[in-house]
Length: 522
Ligand SMILES: Cc1cc2nc3c(=O)[nH]c(=O)nc-3n(C[C@H](O)[C@H](O)[C@H](O)COP(=O)(O)OP(=O)(O)OC[C@H]3O[C@@H](n4cnc5c(N)ncnc54)[C@H](O)[C@@H]3O)c2cc1C
Image 1: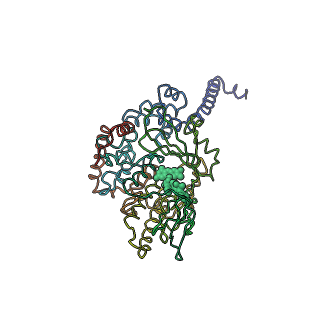
Image 2: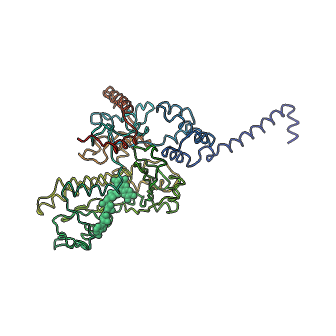
């Protein structure tokens, strides 16, 4: 070695110094740029929790800046969080692209149709020219309103009407007594609280009466089975088999906890926040008095202990003082919903999982269908039952496809849960075909989402698909002739968004006013 240096002459000395310097730089970079230092796992999630619980302050931001390159970027985002979205995105884009992606990997499934949806499909126009906007922000105001924690209406908007369409976050513990009061006092319903001991049937299998512990025999012509997962009438007495869906939707257990706010003024999110986790996802729903949080997971992919840890990471150290409730979920539905003179509604008919909150809307739609089609006599009941079963099968099938869509679009490969979810053997054939088709044409009415009361219309598929990074290839020729109309709708959305943003109060502020003054009755 020394011979080589001597033979090289004085020029060798700077080469040796430079080589030592380069080796030192390489080692330093290898150390500094380790994944766990640049993108610390769970950091984004921890920061989101702090945002949701209003714990972000100067101290938190400055600690984040020191944490890691990702922390620095998150700190920049938080420091600018009250600025207009465009400015915020610009600041983030100027930062590290990979870290920026971690921050913006979220999307909205709003409750509003894209502008002009019944006239024109805006998806192909957005796909050709995104203009730096998410699909949701380009076509509908609701994402921006949720970002700002705004309510969907003002105190002067009459009851049941909206400026931005909305659904309810209900306290189930208060809602059931409310319904009881309304039904018995206003609708003349006779309420009997009793345990069903046995179901009595005639030779045809029709239910003739229920024998109860507290109220004796209760006869009837039509029985609605609302006995939850136990499905005492349709499942047990009439023997209708249960169709298990756990091969498609894996989540079968939920851990639920009620988390109090820091103070009465803590901002309240106006939307449900669903966050993907290692073996499932968490829900986070704000009520005025508390947040309802839960982790829905697959027990085939996570032990209960791991799930408890995952939930604790989301909720934070306060979980130690809170009671976590475990709820087993049996994913599937009855093969027939209406048999003989018995129709099942709610969990007695089936349940999939809470993602997208489809259960209560199905209860409502079933109740509406039963009341509208109420058979005048036993003679025509089978005709109504057949119709009810067809519609219900259609709805359950579509909901399963839609729920599975959220899982198959994942790009996660960090846990077996997400890997197993994209296994084609677990994806219903119809959804596979649609996903194939949508590579070349965005969903719209022709994909059979044309029923009058579609639980998730084509617009829902658009929001989830494009929110999760799916892209359809669009031939520019397809947009020719509709560009002007598209740009009119896109501009209309911008002005509606601006107007609503200026007009709507914060979610908590509106709820407080409704509590104090009530809404204008219609
Ligand atoms: C973890 C989880 C989260 C959910 N989140 C949502 C959501 O966000 N949005 C949504 O829309 N839905 C959600 N759901 C679904 C929602 O909870 C159900 O749709 C709703 O509770 C259905 O009520 P049900 O009356 O069918 O069943 P249950 O609420 O189970 O009621 C069944 C009733 O039958 C009674 N019963 C049983 N056996 C007998 C007997 N022998 N005699 C007399 N009475 C009997 C029980 O006491 C009980 O009161 C969720 C469900 C779960 C499990």
